Length: 381
Ligand SMILES: [Zn+2]
Image (cartoon, rainbow, N blue to C red; front, side):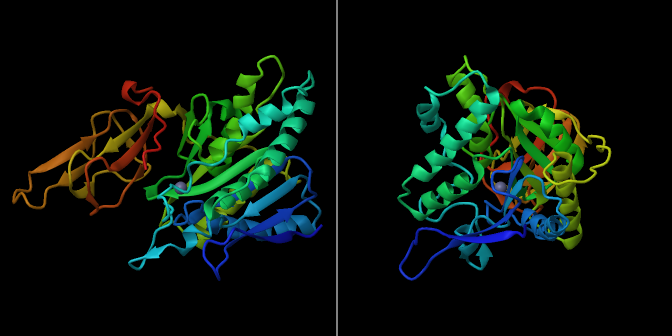
């Protein structure tokens, strides 16, 4: 069965213009497991686009050999609104120009609509409950009447993904090591993905991502329903994760090919594509709580310079970066920002950045929960 390419038009935002999503589908509709993959929901994050660019021909080959067992849906660049955001000769793409929404927030949590639809039909059979919930979720997505282009875009994405067994949302950071954000409900399936991808940090939300990120609303549908219907068997039927493919500048064919190969290996391991995945690689990092993530905020304005690179292991109390006051006339007039934990510096910004107070300057994945971080998601920007 050859791949199908779909073009889905979004509600027009101005007369004479129309944006659309391009979707690639493999396998029989309804075959399991179903995997949904998308890249660049933050439109200026392209390493995942490069990975999917190299993955598609691999899936074409698997398809030609009859190896696609499940259903695969790929949206290689999923944010045409953000793809048009050029200003002062720069591509922006993180926030919507109208309303300044972060493109990865406020996605549709369908759990209330699904609960209303299934409440009198749940039973003792977990598999039957999963099928019922998935059908109700698809119906709920279809029933949304969007009032704007961005609402139509969110509705379309959730309608493509919400009945999946696996959702992979491909992002990147500014300067970063490869890392994952998952739910505490998904630690076991995340181990295989983290090992196959070779991630250097993997953090779990407890118990699930409460913020309405795209990955969050897909995965959290199940625990939200489990909470609402504790008397019925409702499994965690979707493993949904945010993959942060290093930094914005890490876009090469070499890394794209390697990332595609590791995604493909994971698809084989999960039985979506037939083949041999081989022995899982050793996990490079601990799987750590999001409350163990130290976030460094700029206490003042100034010029930024780092002492540590992405992926560096740091100790509590070590200086990660300094903010230099360029007007002080004294090179000693600088503020040092130190790590509050032992862990992996998985994300930072670029040297020479002019920073303002409150700006996030780094993130460190540590195993120990930090009292000042408990209950915080880390979604500061
Ligand atoms: Zn992102």
